[in-house]
Length: 322
Image 1 (cartoon, rainbow, N blue to C red):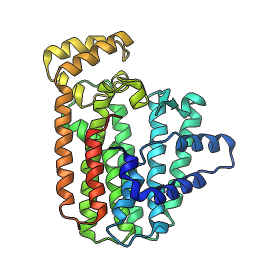
Image 2: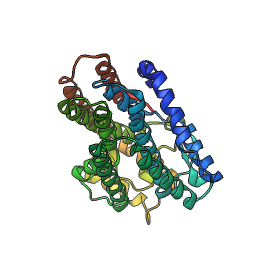
Image 3: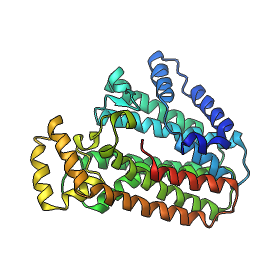
């Protein structure tokens, strides 16, 4: 099932959010305007806005209030991707040129900063101090997660705890507060906000692990960037982490990396080794555990149509191929 199908009941409101995003990123500077607009038009799954809207269904749903959260979360997510592309020296994302590739690193960094600033400005329209506190903490953690990712590049002696803590900060927390802030903005009960936060956290962990699996199993056409890109950049994700626990495999893999670089030929060989190591199956198992925890959180929520949609989104994340 495609996300567009899952979002059928939200189509009108998501379209409204999309138009608001385009209006918010308007800039007087032509390069900022073009770069920001192209980023939005590059697509994306709009997971975070969708979760904001669905979570708001558990309270008093008012799209004029809820859109403020949906737009803010998508702007923050997009800004973090622009910065990621600079750090990783990425040429493509979602099958299109990155901002840093089309212009340069400085333009990309300032475009990311601009989107962050617009997000912070826009969320001030919500007159709920708790919303600002939650968002500030999430951005703080997101930043630490990005720094940790740089810190652990090509560090082969990592453990599962390091990896899980990193993806929690890098991905899961923003998805978790998408759910929490959606519920908060609609004045849903505190208990419901908490269960939605936990649901988003577990789904976010599964989402990132699945992303890391696809870096080994997906094609460039499917995932919008070259396969094996994470490993080439020195990001030790769960599949390779599992493979490295085998000393024989570790001995076969590490010599391929010379001064933080690996040839395309050696990369293809390493990818095959990781696939054959059982790392993919192990990672899928961990992802499924998080999804099961996500389903358990939903059991505490009222049986409204939005609950069924959240279940379907979790199922989509567990089976997606791109």
